[in-house]
Image (tube, rainbow, N blue to C red; front, side, top):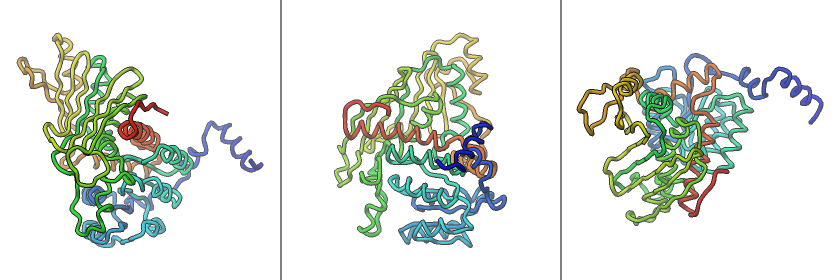
Length: 394
């Protein structure tokens, strides 16, 4: 360490600030009240984000990048007048008009693109899962902390008002001691996208190939695992799992069904199941506690009490907003949320946080540290499925 660096670090230590905090105070924000966004990857998710952000005038899609020309053309049409096209994402990063980027490419590309974006001085909204490999997550944490730039991961369940309400109920203890969480995301379909030309197969259906994808665990269960980590402020310590290609014999490499079991430090077990040949009950969360159960779907939730007395029922009513009429039986009680904006979904709320993070320097709720924790959790589950045995947190 040279003298200049030594003096700089000594001064920081005296003030109690880290280098990353100082960088954050001095970092650039958007050039004006409207954030100029570049979208890298304009497939299903990237294209969907472009359309969603039309409801949010604080963003403008200034540029798009995709290696598939027909997707890039569609993105430009959706983004509207003035949006620039860049087949090579590095050219988009060189565009001085772009304040921040959305990375919505195959999982295996996330790390390099995010690192390049940060090196270019761009704020980053990176879709889940944050990175494919564990070491990539660790390196990205270091890079973000030294950059002073906003970095958000697309785990939008942390932002949906219904999920915020459920998190409050659980943390308040109204379910009692939770020993099991059941996670399900089932469908009856091959999970494939149509391919206009065979040469585009691996580019379009990258989720089917090990080189690019963590399969159902990374693409679906990552959202739910992140929510569990956040609610309990924890992460799994052990994982076991089984998966297979048992129905769709079509050349895919990632499993068409997965079943993993995660164990948390307090002994709580989390079962994660995803099928592609049976859609019964589709998407489902179940938090099972000694005083009650919450069943949570994408946009609605219900509370099922154990044998509670009238005082306990009243307490739950006060927290959940649910009305607890007599005789509801096995139907449960709906969890009511008043804060939903018309037409908004979790992604809208997530991008509102991203906007505030870029403009003010505050850390987003789904940030690089939480994204790394979920990456390591998901990767542990993937390794349990692919390698067998008991995988432990490292």
